[in-house]
Image (cartoon, rainbow, N blue to C red):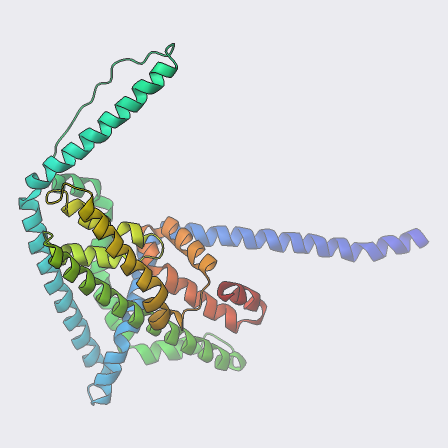
Length: 362
């Protein structure tokens, strides 16, 4: 009798363990499905995320026009058209610079060949020394096939999928941004209707915090990027470097990337300077100044203009960059911080997820 009582008492515990294990397995499977969906639907999701960020960035201007008694739909249309015109003008300037760079490509090809030849010679010397250490291993003669196709053609043929994804996003982006701006109140009201009446106040507070975080991040990042581009442009112009605006634009935007930006910002002036500089001193000066830009940006500008709202610790920031960069490539690095900041806000407003929010900001 006592044994039966013990068995009956033990059954609920075993059932609880089974239920707990099955719920954990279900969560892992669900997480895997979500990650797989984000990976295979990357072009659609990245387009939506960037459209949402642009809508948050342009919404204050549309609201300002609305305060001047301009209908919201008309104001949204005006702002989207002005943004497209600004981007088109900037793209035209870049195309002109790239066309000039393409015409000057033979001047840069010779230094690149010499650097490549020196690298290959050093590698062959290293291999010959290794062969001297292990003479019993014989290596046959190496045959190198050097092809010199047109660089623009090679880039286009090798990146057809990227070009298709870009055209796909560029086609739908203006319409998405316009509809998000023009139908902001309707979308907000429809979103509230998705939740029970007793939860709508909490959802409203969470969405307000998301709006404030994203808007602060976008405004601050845009201002920091503008400062970096102008500073890099003036620095390269003072050095007499070819294509100072194009080089400063690419280098300044690369400098915005956490951690990796300090190295990526070196590549454009290093590549452009191969034809002009033949000593080590100019490159040391360029590397020192760009590294100083990155340190000032990471420790002064971003904390003052961005970090006061996006409170993410260094570990969470690094993990988010690794994950979203692996999932979505270069665009993943761009949207990693705002996505993680939004997830933190959501965790702060859901009681059972509060520990995750505290960990992200610890």
